[in-house]
Each structure stands twice: as structure tokens, then as C-alpha cells.
Amino acid sequence: MRASPATVRRRILPSRKQDSSSCAAQHRRRSLKKIPIEPEIRFLKLKTEQASTSRAGLLRAAVRPRKAKLLLSLLASLFALAACVNDLNPEGGWSGIAQEDNFLYIGSKDGRIVRVDSTTGLLDQSWVYPAEDDDDLGEVYGTPQVSNGTIYGSAFRCRGNNCDGEVYAVDIATGRSAWATGTVKYETRLVGSVGVGETTIAVGTSAIGDDENPPGFLIGLDPTSDAGRELAEQVSARERWRIPVDGAIWGGITVVDDIAYFGTLKGTLYAVDLSDNSRFTANPSDRIQWSFEAGGAIAGTPHVSGSSIYFGSLGDDVYALDLSNRRANPNSSVLDSRSEWKFDTGGWVWAEPLLQDGILYVASLPGKVFALNAQTGQPRWQNPAEVGDEIIARPTIFESNRGPALAVASGEGDISIVVLATGQVSGAFDSDGRGIKSSPVVRNDVIFAHTDNGQLRQYQPTSLSLLNCIEAKGEGKACG
Image (cartoon, helix red, strand yellow):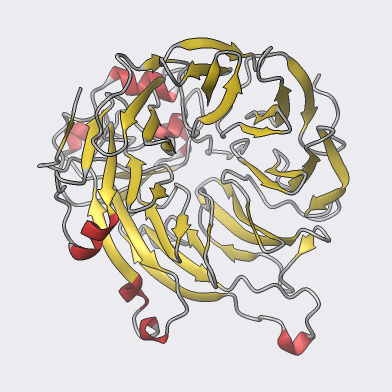
């Protein structure tokens, strides 16, 4: 495998087999890169009986039209994603862990934001949002974002094809809504993490309501807290603007220097100005600084460092783009080989890449982990590390008994340990068969992992032993 400039941009159209046991298994059954498809895009609503899989998935698939005889075999574009994102009846369990002071904040399986004391490893039962007597938020997939004493995020629930999403803001000091009007509601799926800018919260959506055109939006909300404000000073209308984009936004939004970076299921990476500038008032789409068409859907979160942005696609590639080059060529999707590259991993890349000391660590959905020179895209390890299937979350670096290592969580269970120096797999943290679809975090020399059935498992990094396990909801009982 080698890095090379892109000369062609492909689109993916994964097949979905109803007898598959995992999204990674579905990926292996068909090469997604060799299916010729036409450039237009539309959205198919998959009825319940069509979308039934061993793991329910998000109901709407972004696919390009093709001749009728191919539609059955290619029905689930991005949707073996249907086997990955459980959502005929969304179940959540994907929420990442946010850290602030001595506390960890998690979107629980019962649709609430809970707080865990990282020192004791126990649930803080005095703090929960919404309160137990209030309606829950729905299913939380993204990681809560903490900024200036407030936690921001989103959740959604579906009944058949009808989905309702909510954007929340929680005052950390009180555990209550920071907005007097409560959550902001949209008739759509709100899957990825929101982005927090200097004066704007960026929210990515799928199609809103019954209208599937456009298939997604980036929406800018006023983040101002109403805590302590008189009624006349409170914000009555949160939405400031919305920008139509070419596909649903499922990945998280990365904000650097008030620029939001995100991808769509059509395979376009966007850079959008979030600043409070009057020149964007007449046409919010003027906020789009540049866009880049990748060779497959972008379901994960991009990573920005210095003058580069790194992201994966479901076309099997990971990309490195030069931000200055993108700004100079805002409509170009041709890579500049002097400062940009892509690398073929041989499998979908959903997880956000991890950059450390000039090395980019990339985990593919089928369970291979690569170490690439961040400037050239050339592999550092002789062979990729092979770990468990369904790698959706970014790996985490920690200090193992063999030196710095990656903790790589698998949606099928366990957290593999990959030694940075050699790429060798040196063991695993046992998750008792529970899948993990969010990144582990290291706090107070303990590794915390949120499982897809709602447990918070806590490990000792060098002995690999389980120190504690609690239910990250309700009374925070010990795991059964």
C-alpha cells in the first residue's frame, strides 16, 4: 500500500446482507470501491421490513440511483451502516466521554447526561440532565462538548420513519438547562457531536421533516446561557442561520479558529466560517470557505492540526489536506502531491484519525490499525496491527507496561492494546463481550470506557485488570 495523489473520486454503494453479523463482516463481503455508480444522489426510505438486520441501523440510506436490477443488491449505501448505527429503533450507547475538572460527562442509555466522579469512579446522583422526573432527550450518539461552564450536545429518537432531534445546553453548576426555552428541536436525526465556536454552536443534521431535499443542513445556534438573566435579556430564538449541504451529516464537527470542518454521507468535506459577521447575513451559504469531494461517504470526525486536516472515508481511504491549499483552491478536489496525500487502508475508515509526534494513527472498520507519516502518508510499521472488528472510535494513547500504546475499542467487544513503537498487539482490556463505540479516556491513571449497553468500565492500564464497573444511568449500580 502506498500514498498517492487522487486522480479520480469514487462514491461508495455498500451492499447490505440481511444475514450479516456485523458491519465489518458486511464490508468484507463486497468490494465497495469497484461498483460503478452515477453521479446524482437521492435518499431511499428503507421500510422496516427492508431494513431489518441483525443489528438495526439508521433508517435512511444515502445512495445514488442505479438501474432497477441493481437496487436490491446495492440497497444500503452507507448502510451496512444500517448494521452499524442501531436505529430502526435507535438504542444509543455510542456517547463518548467528556472531561471537565474531576468529572466525566456521558450520554446515558436512558437518554440523559450523567456525571461521574473520576476520582471515585462513581455516579454523581445529585447531577443529571434532564431530571429523572422529566422526559429524556432520546438516544445520544455524539460526545458532549464542554465550553465556558456549559455542556452542549444533541440526541434523537425515531418512531418508524419519523425522527425528532433535540439540541441541549446544560449549565454545569446546576445541572439544569442553560437555555430558558429548553432544548432546540428539529424533525431529524442528530447523530454526530456538535461543534462549539466562539459565538456559535454548529449542528449537523440529516434531511429535516418530510422534505428530503436538501438531504442535510449545518445549522448555527446562539449558545448564550440564560442563567442569571432577566426575562427581557433571555434569548428567545436560538437559530441564527442554516446552510444546505449535499448529504446527511453523521460525523462530529471539528471547530478550529471559528471554522467548522465536517463531512457528509455524499462524501464532501466542508469548511464553514462560524464567525458573527454581517457579510454572511444575506446568504448564509457564503460561509462555506471550501469543499472537497472524497472517494466515499464521510461518517466520522475530521482531525485538524496546524496547517493540515486528516479524515477517513467509507471509500477505504484516509486523506491529508493542506488547509492553505484548500483556501487557495476552494472548489478543487485534486490533491496537491507536494503537501497532500491519501492512503488506501483496504477498509472503511470511520474512526477519527489520531495524530501524535508526527505519526497519524488510523483505524479501519474491519480492524486494522495503521501508523503513517503525517507529512507523506508512508507507513511506519511493517504491517498494520490487526485488532477486533467494528472500529468506530478514535484510538486513545496511554502508558502500558510496554511503553506508549494505543487503546483501540471494538464495537464487537474488548479494547486492544497496540504498542506504538512496533505496531504489535500486546493484549486487551476485557469488556465481557460488550461492544465499545466511543473512545476510551485516561484519567487519574485509570482507563474509562463506555460500552454500548450503558456500562462505564474502569481499567488499570498496566495490569489490564478491571477496577470497577458501574451502570452509567439511574442509581449507578455496580454492573451485574
